[in-house]
Image 1 (cartoon, rainbow, N blue to C red):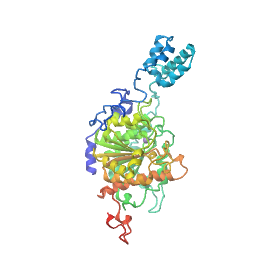
Image 2: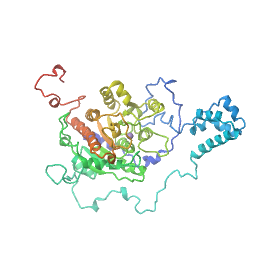
Image 3: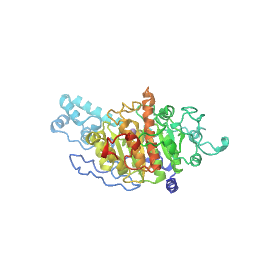
Image 4: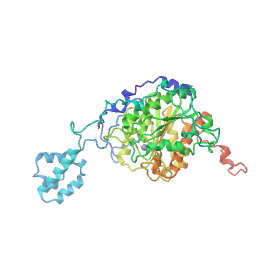
Length: 514
Ligand SMILES: [Mn+2]
C-alpha cells in the first residue's frame, strides 16, 4: 500500500503558486437557465464530467450573479408609471429592481401610492440602492494589498533549516515522560509521538500523520482555531481497543502528531496555501494526512493537495455536513460555505465523485436542483427520515468506492446533532447521533481506500463540557480503527467482532448469528 501511494505521488508535481486560490479568476454566470422540477426536469442523471474537467453547468444559477429576467409589468401598474422618464421605466422592465424589492411587493406599493411624485421617489430609491451595491472600479478596492516592505513577509511559513537546530536522527519523538499512565508529558493528538518533517514520517514508517490547521476566518461563529488543541488536551476517546472490531488502532498503526500548519489569521487565502503544501508533503511520504480544523474552508486546500498527489479526478470525496458548502458568487472566493464549489471549479474532483451526507440546513429548491444538474450525490436527513439511517449508510458507503480508487473524507462536526456537538459555529438541529456517525466512519475507513480525512468546525469554547471534544476525538478514533482494520485485512461490509456482539453462553440469536 505504501509503495502504491509513493508511485502515485512521484507522478504528480504541481507548483503551488500557480494553482493557488488567488489565480481562480472571476465567476461568471453561464449556461442554460436552471430547469425547475415542475418544468423541464426529468434529468435525474446529469451528464458526467471528465477527469480534470470543470463541470459544464457549474456556474449555472450562481446566486446573486444571474442576469435578471426582464420583468413584465401589469397594465394597471404601467398606467401609474406613465409620467416617469423612459429610462426609469426601462430600468423597472429590466428586472434588476428585483434585486432590491421582489416584484409583487413593488407592484403592491405602486398600486397603493396615489401621488406620482411619491411613486417616482420610490422608483428612484430602488434604482439608487441597485446602483450602490454594484462593484465600482476605482472607488471599490477589488483586492486587499499586503505590506511588501515588511522584513518578515514570509517568516510565518518559512521552514526552519535543519542547520538552525541541534542535530538529531529523523523519526517520531515521544513526548510522554512515562512508560505507562495517562496524560504525562505534553498533550498530543491521541497521545501520539510528534514528527516535524517528511524525513521523520519516512523514518518512522508513519501510517497516519495528524496535523492541526487552526484556520478561523471562514466560520460563522469564530473559535475553530481552538479545535486542534481541544482534541489534544481532552485526548479522551482516542485510546485503547475499539469494542466493535476488537482492534486497537494505535497498536496496529504508526500514528504521529505532525503539529499545526502555519496560519495567517488575517488571511484565509494565504493560510490555505501553506495547508495545501503540508497536506501534500504528508501524502507524498505515503502517510494518510488527518487534518484537524479549523473551519471548513480547509476542505479546499486538503482536497486540492490530494489531487496534487493522486491526480485530478482520481479522488472521490465524502462530505459530512449539515450544510451543502457549494456556495458561490460571494464576494470572498473562499469561506467555510464554499469549499466544494472551489474544489470542483478547479477540477480537482468531479461532481459525480462528490457525496454529501447528513444535509439538513435550510437551503432552497434551486440549491438542490443545481447539485442535481451538475451530478453530485447528496444524502439529506430527509432521505434518512424516509429510508432510515441503515439504508442511507449502505448507499453512501457503496457510492464512496464506486467511481474512484481513492477516497477523501471531510467531516464537519455540525453534521452531528447539537445534542452531541454543541461546540460548533453553525449548529443545526435534527442531525446524526454518535451511534450513526461512528459506524459510518469506521466502515468507510475499513471498506474504502481512504487517503486522507479531516475533522473540522469544532469550536470548543461554545461547549463548557468535554462532550464536543470527546465526540470529535471519537470520530477520529473510528476512522483510525477502520484504517487499522483494513491493514489487518478486515474489509467485509459492516464487520463487527463476534466476541463483543454475543456473549456466547446461549444460542439466543440462533440462525441470525453472522
Ligand atoms: Mn461545512
